[in-house]
Image (cartoon, rainbow, N blue to C red; front, side):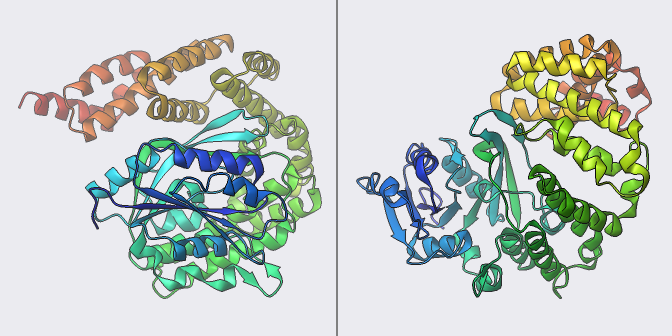
Length: 475
């Protein structure tokens, strides 16, 4: 590959695109990297999608292809791939946006990592139509086949491919595009990345949010249980493949549990409570330990998911989900109270970071009324938020957010929690500096961390990197 200035092909499958498609196209044409082509595949849209595309065709980088029949996003991506010539390929969903530096960042990353076949990045998540930021999602530094199977860590717009890996025909399995008149809209990405991994493809990540993904509050997913079964079929296809390592294939129950939970959440979000109940029961059948602990993992999961959309009040969503819980959980008012308090607290934090401030104050007042608990798992979520914010917007911006979050914790009457959050943040930075071999920074980060949370004095890992950094920093 000529990595000095390789051509990058960006392919957008389009169906009823409208204004959001125009914004997606504009985000491609605004890239700082000049060597690119854009292919938009109109998947037989019945509206003005074609005219939305043709208005950009005066730009020599843009081409439009139209399907005579609607065949789905995966088939549209394959059509676009066949018409493209770039050495690097990006699939962009029509309602997503990419950062002006995304293409350049991935070209440079692939140039410096020739062993990587698929690169990926973090994203900013936005609710549509409000355009309210929901948060920053950052993928793990290392991703392999287990991650693909257990929860599919990427959206299509997050990934960038070397062309040679897309030439593997089995990743375009028609069974997972359409079967007669029955469209199978779920699981195709699992098949693509799963079979790439089975063929030896390696994945590598960029720790920056380089695209925006829209979540449509008003979108309805029809036939949820059939969609769930389609995704389960795709997972089973990968797990039962002879090339799948034993240590991955034994994770089937965890993988299936995750899928049932995700579709149960969508069911409750769409007021389809009976399908939601059936899907929850399937999840518990796969993993009975979901009901262990107090609050149990199932309740913790529902609480976290219920505030991931602003489309409806989380209290209403929680109560409906609780009514469908198995066993005695549906009448366990104590666990419901915990979930209501936790979601109020999570909403308060999100509004504190992203706004509006008035909503943050209202959510915080509610969290105070419900005696919201600030435990280690919650502090870890805050730490994760701050790290992602810093990676996206820089240390100065992250420091301002940290100050606001600290004030929020103090308003909850949790000054010790504020100190522990500060300590967690410093500890994370210390370990990161240690792995980057920036040994002189490590003690300077660990000392105030221990001051804020003396429990770290008993942590072997902290003690180890402190001693090693002091010794290696003098070499």
